[in-house]
Amino acid sequence: MVRPLKKGYVHLEAFLAPYIRALETGQVTTPTLAASLRWIAAQPDLKPHLQRLPGNARCLMLGYSTPDNEEALRSFLGAYGIDGAKLHAVDLYNLKAVYRKLNLPLPRLKYHVADATALPKIFESAFDLVIQDFLLNCVPHADQVRVLSETVRSLSEEGLAMIHFTDASGVARLPRKTIQALWDEHALRWQRTAYQLSDINGTAGRESALLARVGGKVIVDEQPHQFTYVTSVDGHFEFFADAPRIFLMFAEAGLTLASQTSSQGIDYHQLCCRRHYCLLRKRRLSRPD
Image (cartoon, rainbow, N blue to C red; front, side, top):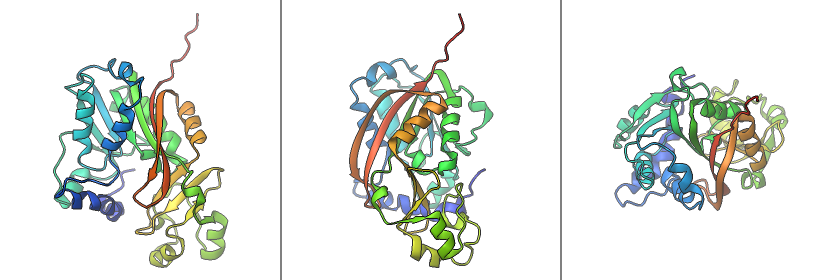
């Protein structure tokens, strides 16, 4: 499924607004890949992994957002001798149209409008490095294993995945609603594949009223240790799970953790959060003797 520009454009514009305002001052405060790469670079065992990548490595960014991601990634890779990287980006939105609409510079990479849960067949084993910068926090819980499996499918045999995510330790403390309460109070039947409030059947014509009641709250999923945060600005959803659950999903998808670090901070919704920065490889299957 390709999500059209108009479906989530307001959310994307709100996400990029602080970035746009900061262009004049040079002080970008929105979450960016550059900040994540600084944490990745601090891992003492990182260098041997990256030096195994070819100098013209094919790199895929899943869920691309701020335009400075391209420059940040090229600078990061160049520090490890990867000077001729070929960069690709996948997003549900037509990012070229978004950047033109917002009068933002167009990065130097190849864009693909596609769904990270069902990447094009030509991506099979095509990339040396696949990056998810907090994509798991933007994908419904029901689709997260598929996103990770598609990441594995797109990796070359010796490829690396950089996956960054925020766990549920912050949002678990916020006011919450159960999916049963949503039905009892608002006749709202929860859909685990929804990206935003307006995606849910029966919300048409009453989005504003529902947003006033559930915006800024956490919806407790039917699965344990999974939480959905409803943004108070536009009813867009953000998805959180306990870190052990995420690491289990890595293993289920066929990924092996090679290196990791974490940080504590405040996100742009002013939520206390713990971020994890993980370097992973394809799990090698044992060969019969």
